[in-house]
Image (cartoon, rainbow, N blue to C red; front, side, top):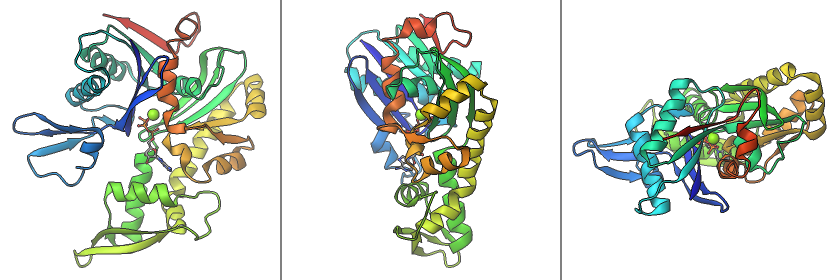
Length: 337
Ligand SMILES: Nc1ncnc2c1ncn2[C@@H]1O[C@H](COP(=O)(O)OP(=O)(O)OP(=O)(O)O)[C@@H](O)[C@H]1O
Ligand SMILES: [Mg+2]
């Protein structure tokens, strides 16, 4: 069996080559600090964030797109693979994604984790390559394609042509930092402290960065910083706009910067075909329109953007030889046991 893994800061997804995504859960793991037993993984662990007693630690083993807690990342990957395959003894080949500007040490951690989980052979694929493959784009042509993958930890921006990355950038600004900006805004504007999950839910319901009109409203609950008591307040899409627009503008600037550095022939292709947005952040309301306005290049959101990278990791098995061979910037690396 060949499996593709999107090991994301926010979500971990597993896709089986030739099939579709069979596992999709938050990248969260909860364990008992005394016995070191795993209490829960995925959605069950996510529900415990901010709610667990002192003896249970709830951790996200990835931060900014890379592994920050080695042991827990190994365990998480192993548990997830076991959920998919059962406990049978087999050695799959695994394609697993990493952000574009990953260091050797960070890449090594991902390879080791996949091996620990029982992989016979591990391949690393850079997120933008997987994103385009998963979105169904033919990247083998001598034609420039631009993708912006906005995840939880990193935003990866790249131009690809002929199965390879021509130019790329990866910034540690994505969903999680945007959520933090929402928490900060609510704190300074309303003196109410809200949790991470509340901020994320409000962002998903309210974010409109192109033309907020006050039509979206949502009640959120937190703690009043003056009285220390539970408080509820209504947020609007205007609030959300003010909270996140600085972060969004920073993202748009990064896209512009890469466009400016793109060689002319490829730049012309991108002007014809447009920019493709993938990752959960692609769903931020109006982001496609804002990027189109700021860059002058038409911009669209991929179908099912959150699943593109995972689908791409599994699809990579089909075009492995062309991806892995001969190009100056090889976008798929293989490691044998
Ligand atoms: N409808 C939505 N509107 C805005 N943001 C959304 C929406 N749905 C999901 N998100 C955000 O998308 C992010 C998760 O996206 P994704 O699963 O692509 O990240 P990831 O692959 O885990 O992270 P990374 O690639 O950075 O390691 C979260 O920050 C989540 O809040
Ligand atoms: Mg991702």
